[in-house]
Amino acid sequence: MATGIIEARMEQHGQFPLLEVQQVTRRFSGLVAVNQVSFTVAQGDIFGLIGPNGAGKTTLFNVITGLIPPSSGQLIYQNQRITKLQPHRIAAKGIARTFQNLRLFGNLSVLENVAIARHTHRRSGLVQEILRTPRAIAEERQTHLKALELLAWVGLAEKAEQTARNLSYGDQRRLEIARALAVEPRLLLLDEPAAGMNPNEKAALSQLIRQLRDAFNLTIVLIEHHVPLVMGLCNQIAVLDFGQLIAIGQPEVVRQDPAVIAAYLGKE
Amino acid sequence: MTMTAFLETYGFLIVSMLLGALLGLSVYLPLMAGQLSLASPGFYALGGYIAAILSTQVFPVTEGSFPLLELLLEMLLAAIAAAVLAIALGIPVLRLRGIYLAIATIAFVEILRVLALNLEITGGAVGIFGIPQPFQSQIGYLWIVVPLLGLSMVFLYRLESMHVGRVLRAIREDELAADTMGINPTHYKLLSFVLGAVLAGVVGAISAHFLNTWNARQGTFDASIVYLAFVLSGGSRTFVGPVVGGIVLTALPEILRGMAGISGLPIWLAQFLQDGRLIIFGLLIVMSTVFLPPRGNYTRTVTTMAMAKAAARQRETRETREGSD
Picture 1 (tube, each protein chain N blue to C red):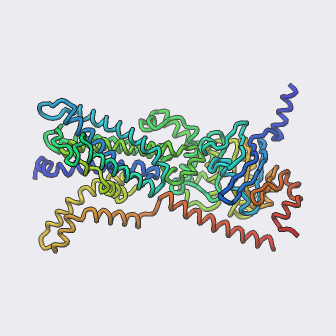
Picture 2: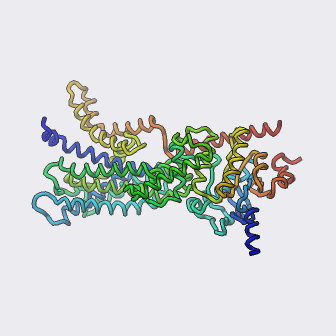
Picture 3: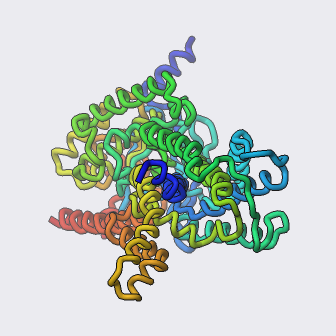
């Protein structure tokens, strides 16, 4: 009874570790892009990952999502080791991401981009699809409805039939978010979601990220350069510099940290 | 000219054109997932040898025409053999991308050709003769080829309009992104590769009977280029492209030969029209590569990487400027 209450409170305050990054290092020949980085992301967090260009933030995302294996260290997700799993296995476990340099399926429609990411939730295979079994047809309709629903969330429902690469830059960023949501992740990694957006769009995006977290029960890790946005949105912030974790904690604490100030503004 | 006379005269050409369409589709299938495989002639040759050996050496000799059921059995065995070989070849080879995959598959075709030239069972350099005929005339092959092409086109139409087709196109667009969306690219690349191989093997089994003779010249590098030209000239967006390309380009040499017969042409031009088939196919490939927009993974990766670099640089300068203000 008592533990149940405590657990419920811990959950409410986001104390359950969802992702644990343990001593992760990634080298590219001579360069150490990520160096012995450890931190824990708790369930329900909006976790900010900041740092100057080349600090290793995107490399860390690539390691978490399995695109590149870590040179050493472990990744624990929901108490399971996911180190060195292939990307599609990690996605199937419930980790989805967006890309900083936009990796949409450019020649496919906006709707198709989202529909593809329903892959892990589909059951009918090639044979059923070719035979057009009632189940395959019903599933295809469901996939379309779900994709439209997610597009409505990010404000792209009217553009569902357009070719993805014809969208504006901001719309493409939102489409990346819708596509990642279609995986039905528990952990969503956003790589510079606000890049190239104007202040109004950035404010709207902050709002959207918060709404998505609550509506889909997500935990979010985001890389962002725009410091005010991160400070306003995140409840935890980790700062990377030259591949090393130099600070971690709540926004107010991190903002005052001398090492962070030095990394961002240069030493006196 | 009556219908019968027309079919008698052009029967060979009409069946060849439809076989060309099927071979175009066999190259198109792996290309749906962005895999430039030139292995089709290898599977085509394999299927042909299976049919040739079975019908001349294994099956009992029958009075009259060759039983259709045995032809269907040969097609089935050719499909199975092609699938098994495609899986064995595909698992190591599909790790390669773009031009490297093309080179590896050319090597595969060459290996099979050299094997066929030197093995006893394939008849060495002479090949296999007198493959029995299931039909009275060559136009009769339409009974097999038309349903096969029809089924293949329905298959591809449905494939393209459903989820698996979408997955293949996603892999063609961006394999890594598809992977992070939960799709196993190796699985689907292998699937499309095997489907293409099966189709080529089945067409080979039919062709062995249709051509009456089978030898090592059936699966060569030339054939790889010709089938690729079918797809590239027709277009690789939908399955209609390779079908049209296969039909038109198979008829092209006959049309050129007809043109060469026009009196009053200079001799060099008439000769070029008659013998320059491969040169013209090569030109078609070059032109379609130049004039049709690039869709290869490689090109896309390079351009997006360059764009992302430029964007990052711009952002950096902007932020430094904002910071100093």
